[in-house]
Image (cartoon, rainbow, N blue to C red; front, side, top):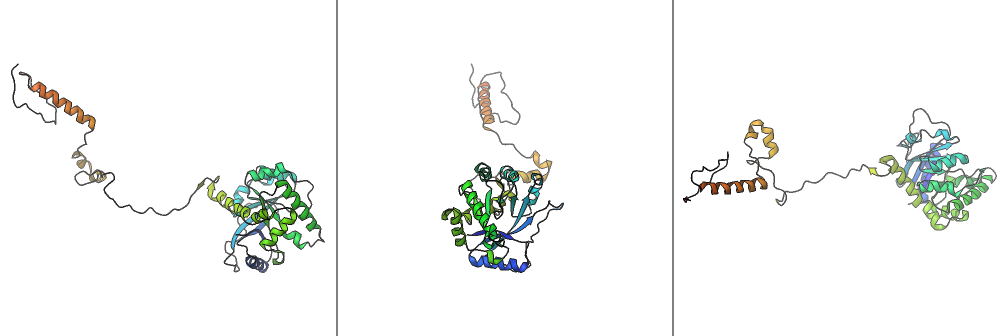
Length: 322
């Protein structure tokens, strides 16, 4: 399966419909509609992408909802958890080195998306990006701004330079490639993307995983984050337990006068008086020992046998004078 996790939702509906149809024709199976937040989070957080789109979409294309938050200040991260519950994928786009280090180290997100079409005033460090990879957070590269190159080729040069540096810093691990195509003209097929990644220094195997395995792990991890507690507990409906037939080989039912014990308790306190408590093995041994002593004492003249309430007394058939 091939994934494109960045299809901007802020363009016209006709252009989104064309882009999704073209992605389905190119062979993509999953696409994520992206809503970008460049300002502070609103007071009431809700998903800006409706579950049912007002236009028809390809049946073979699974659609996800994604939110990308542009971070300029580290103090904007106090409500990211509540924002992540309204979207399928939460991505962060840091603009400076300080916010990038904080996003890799402590912020809760599923994806770190960098605008590689611009020039960064810092270098990507392996120690910083390794913190995100250890937490399971992937790094995204978007190729559409460099493919169109509407600014005279500057964005294309920056994309090649930054992507090469990013792949060298991460050693090709945890890379996800998306389109970020605002028009259908900027989309490329899966194998074209793999060849494009080879130009940046990413091997064909890693390029294939960037639009397949690595992208799928982002979707699965985001789903586990929403539906479980730290990816451990998940509530899944497993169906009803089928009734088992009573073969008679298991435990016998506790029947008293052809009634269950629970049924007798429901009859009232009068029924409890008729219940006879079963005798344990210890009581049976004690009773047998007591009966043996009674048999000996009954043979001694002038000594009456012991009488126990509720217990039968066995008398000796003949006595002998001592």
